[in-house]
Length: 413
Image (tube, helix red, strand yellow):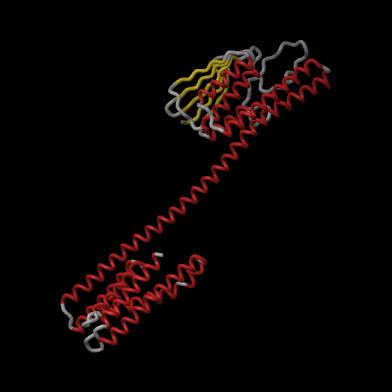
């Protein structure tokens, strides 16, 4: 639409220049012929300029690569023709009754100054001014025309370059907007992939932990039945397997719920977890919150929640009937979770296999090793928690501190 309006305005200006120039015949030797040639050449150059740009833009939309090869030469010829028309119109405008032809020069300078680089625009404007001053000398025109028309050409050239700078900025803004859209689309794609990886990691952790422990229990029950013929212990192990299955299903439901909705504040999540552990295992669980609680992003809070759940699970397995203390500390740059529980008389063990102790029947239980950084599947447990925390810039350590088994995890705020 704007291109059509601009073309109509230029066509109207061209017609007006022709009417003003040829209503009263130009005076001077050869002035009529010069005016006719300049007017016709200027009109042809302007027409070719518009047609070349229209065809070039259409071809650019259809085949951008072909335009660079096929559209360069026609445009160069059109620019040369437009420059010649500007100089010739400037020369002819110095004669009596042909002053309107300077409009053709100004239109040509405006086109070239808008579309081309600064040196080319100034070169065309300079040639136009030289041709104009030559016409002034040949026609004997006054000083006002000799000074006024060149200043008018310079002003039009400056305006055309300002217009070109505005157009370049608009094109750069459009390109930056397109790049921003691409970047946002890529960010959305990466976010989807991250979410898929998070979902896979959560479900894997839950299922690997539950199914791995269940596999150990089933193997133990099988060994008790086939090797030891101990039905009572096998039933006890199977009861434990049933509880593990129920716990695994409940944990899966909690994981899916956490994936579908945002986590509650971290201190509330830990309070709920402590209450659940207290009711399920009948042991005292103390929760302390130090510092000023503040919201923590879900991707930072979730590893701490998982670490607390793993530490409580290990405490129930390896130190039954022992109190547990959970401390959540809010610092300026970090949030730290600490889970402490006393060591049992025979020490915590690293797995859930009731056949892990190979001592002969009737032998007192021997001291057992402290829990390692992995549980039954080698990828869950504290090792999995450490990897999860490392992804968020956090840390994890576990070991014996002052006669207690301590798990300590921290994430940056």
